[in-house]
Length: 331
Image (cartoon, rainbow, N blue to C red; front, side, top):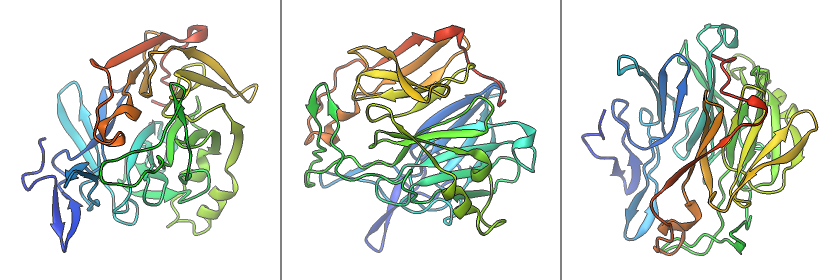
């Protein structure tokens, strides 16, 4: 799979739209490997482009945003899932995903994928995908617990941060729903905005209902969101381990915190000055959590075109507490 033959995007009536190719990669955002040796590739279908020295992102067309399953044993594409425009909007941005592959997770018996739409311009929320039927749906659309916040000013390395993009007015990062993670037994989804200090949860039974099958399911989901309180700063991605521990990547604190589901509090886990905007993370069978350092606040697109990142890039790891390891409960 290569980039689309017709290019990553096209202009239609003066408006930029991304390619609708379902057979090629357009803009890969997240990777996930399930214990059955399947590599899942989440393609947002929305590449970043730079026209007239201004960073832009073309709108998505059905077919472009997709989830691709690759068999790592045979190195072959097993299946490609796409999303209708009623589920993935033109201004959606799929950011991350989690899986519950157990037969009882869906009526099809083939498992479910939970995907967050973290759009900083559109309608944030959860996208669910039945891996057996290919049907997808949304829940918690623009709910206060998923919707981006305005005028959030975080501090990195002790300096207040404002977004300074070439050709655009001074602004703030406004990314919505970001960190997501399932509980050990898949019955609870923990999540948060990037630009908020609060952590939320909802029982997954409310996310797994397709509104087409139950017209009041959206209200039921909204009514069952739990605000678990503040955790001491903004958080990026989440991970978990075989002990059910929820790890939260904390870019402001150069740290990773834990949400303790017993004490109902955030706790310190690891802090290091090298942890400059930790992003994607994954727990390994070797008992370590691995996370990359992408230095996002120092990219040129957020600093008037000046690249303030230090090279080379870094991936760090930290030993999990209490002999934790990768969980296979939901496989």
